[in-house]
Amino acid sequence: MIQLLKPKTISAPNGTYSHGVLVSEASKFLVISGQVAIKSDGTVPDSLIDQCEVVWGNILAILEESDMSVNNLIKINSYLTSPQQIKDFVEIRAKYLQGHCPASTLVVVSALADPRFLVEIEGYASI
Image 1: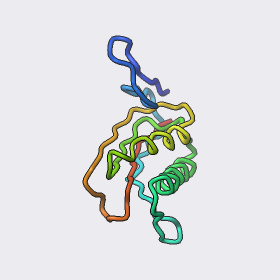
Image 2 (image 1 turned 180 degrees about the vertical axis):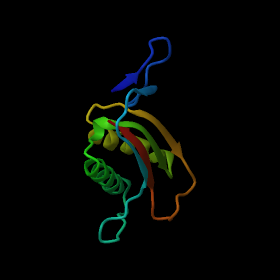
Image 3 (image 1 turned 60 degrees about the vertical axis):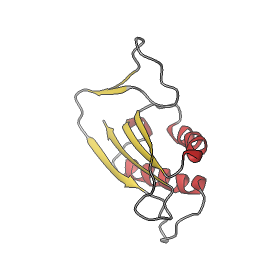
Image 4 (image 1 turned 30 degrees about the horizontal axis):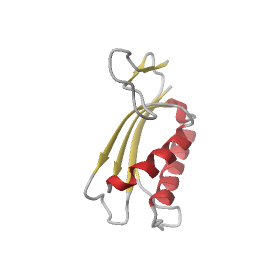
């Protein structure tokens, strides 16, 4: 069972995330490695929006392979290379999470492993 935690004694989340996620009696626990926007043909899109679409597609494929969905995500760590990308990133993230609010961290970094990468997302899911 997954319980999303949003205590009323602290400030409300200002986005699609929860302050904590309690997992009790998990029968499956999935760790998703950092996903970057490498398409199946080896190309990397130029725009952040296109890269986010590829990354979320990868995450959905990994979840599906594990008989899970976005509703099983309990934690997401996201890395962007520019603070100007946050608004677009948040909109795409909300589209894929469809109202689900896992615990989350968003960090802006100076670079990722390849200079073409603008976003990387890793996650944890549980049933």
